Amino acid sequence: MTDLNINIFEARRAKVASNMEENSILLLSSSHIVPRNNDTTFPFRQDSNFYYLTGLEEPNSVLMLKSDGSSTIFCRQKNPDLEKWDGFMWGFDEATKHFKFNKGHDISDIDKLLPAMIRGTSVLYSLVGKDKVFDAKVVNWVNSANSMERHQTNIDLKNFSNILGLMRLIKEPEEISLIRKSCEIAAVSHKEVMRKAKVGMTEFDLETMYLNEFKLNGSREPSYTPIVAGGSRACILHYVDNNQTINDGDLVLVDAGCEFGLYASDITRTYPINGKFSGEQKAVYEVVLEAHNAACDAIKVGKSCIDPQRTSEKSLSQGLKDLGLLNGSLDEILDKELYKEFYYHKIGHWLGLDVHDDCPYSINGEDIKLKENMIMTIEPGIYINETAPVDDKWKGIGIRIENDILVTKDGFENLTPQVPVEVDEIEQLMQG
Image (cartoon, rainbow, N blue to C red):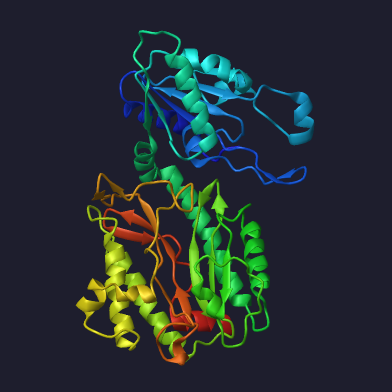
């Protein structure tokens, strides 16, 4: 069941309809049941765009929204026998009433009904490229509709991804409340595991502790597969094996967030498993922390969403130069992008129903400008691989610091402040 009031979804559909061309239709598909192996499936998680406009958390569903604001849901017919096995299902009649659609039909009838329903439409929108199977169905429906009348104007198929993505960028108060709760759960969980982490534990031990804390604090699922990387494995950005022992003296980088009401959080902390940073670890950590804080300060309404990225590149480049890990002038380091030896990802991403929220960063070559109630992550990092052209004492150090940041009219608010981030705070927590 949804955590948001049904009226919110109805209002969103009305807003979307107002952004559609005259005599147009938008088609959206739900997620599908995905097989895991023989006779078992992965837990169902609704497609974020479909959920955003419907609130319906069932597979095998399609939303049809017209530019006049009317909506039709295609979903499963009520089946008491199937409910004995799989649990409650709405059925198209009750779903229509509860979620305030104008009409409802059995999803098994969609191929028969839809071509006639879209016939004569000028434009048909869908999220082109998001689901290749659904893309093929849309093309077939359009072709069937176009072939019904020889002299009718063909339906123009257009991608609606950017329009819907821009709408999702600005978070409603109810969304911000759910994201706050998700962030709070993740932050409290990070802090608790950091407090309990000890030499001799494995990455799997820590992963288990994080997942357990998420559930204990009210989140059913992580928002992505956690990264728990000890030692030099922290230099692998998407390391998810999480199966090695963390040795005394190693840093451990943990990137882990959770979902609450389908809304995501995303936090990264890097800390010494023995509770004490070495001199080199501390020096690199302080450079990353300074870049993190500078990038946050670059968040201002009306500024480009890329400004924090540029700020982080400049800050990290200066820090790497000060440590002797990069040579040359700051301008040369930036112009030649020499920092990419150690910093090879972007500063962050939009956050919402997806941990990487399905929203654009530029439209027609122009950067998106920051607006109040956007939410993004800020996560600079330095990764010194074993092959890096530096003194051995630096090799194997991988550090990332990530918080979830709300754009406010006066600047920004850190939604994940409960987790210690200063060196002395981390050491005090872990040694306490």
